[in-house]
Length: 134
Image (tube, rainbow, N blue to C red; front, side):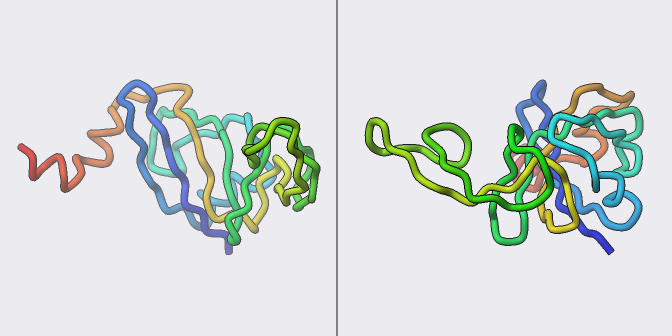
């Protein structure tokens, strides 16, 4: 059985929410690619549409949108996601995961692309820090 931590980013509110997805909710992500849109109903987000923006596997290796396939690859990077050069012209071979979501993923990052009737704050409630501040 597949289990994922789904991070839902709400750009309007500037907040992110964590959801534990398992079973049918998690299997809806398997086989999708970074950039694909997924219905939020299995996660308890009725009316919401989520766009997959990234993820990482159990060892922390990040997925890269421009790398097709499902497995890990060692690629030569000169800049961008997964490598930040310290010297001008520096290149380094790094292990990066492809853009297809598999059962090896632990975390999937998503962005809200279509909103439902309720706000995310109503669905998840306020955090303990916000409740203590009031």
